[in-house]
Length: 351
Image 1 (cartoon, rainbow, N blue to C red):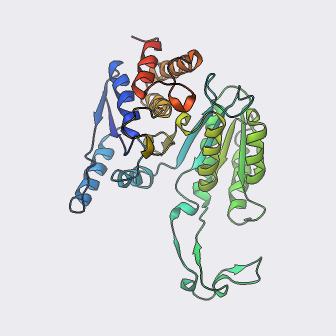
Image 2 (spheres, rainbow, N blue to C red):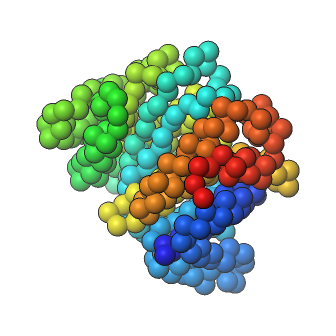
């Protein structure tokens, strides 16, 4: 029996999560869902957070919907509290999906995003807080706290954080069929101390994986190439902010955020969530696309050692898209979220 902490999220997110959970329950995979309370108020918020933390820590992993409210505190614990440093974002075109590209066939890449550091350390402040000697601006030729009223943000790239995420990217590339290439990218020409460190560590890690091709690209060059020739990429490893932005760009190439699953992995914990938001405009319509949630759940099944079921879910989703009869409105269809999941269940080749 596997114990999974389940957070449905807010707004329309539960309308994607619930039919996915119902589908997995029908497969009788031995999953025990643990649902923390999420109806926080000003008086019980701290108690709710502690309850959520306890549930997360007692579970084998977590499945998370999209959040914009009470469950966000639990997401912070899943990410920083459990040090889930590797955000793995598969970008793969499913035949029948509504891609904006003329030729999306063959897009099959994975973006591996560092999940804890960079600007996401959330250390900001007023420039006048920076005591002398303040950092010196090489472009403006003066200490940054002398530029006038304004604010700063710290970009933090550590050696250990970079080494572990880049090594994870190579390990993922080693397990994938096909080209076996890792692309490491940042803005290392303008930020040699931080972004430069990231690619420098990438080169050092690459030595341990002689059978995998390694390349470095400036982040703006990578963004352009992703649109012009996405099929050339295999595994892309990025610092946090760039990974956040370009993984959404990648989702757009294959049909939108409703198609974008993700898994966040640490040394001894993992959680899985769709990359889309809470879709408040879709609340009550029953038409939010559950594909990203289903594919995230497949990643979760693989983590739990249920690889056969994980592969069967992916194949069934592919079959539904190829048939085209039960797609949600974002993909040009008229199906509800429940109808889409029902079609996936019918296509599953497992009892």
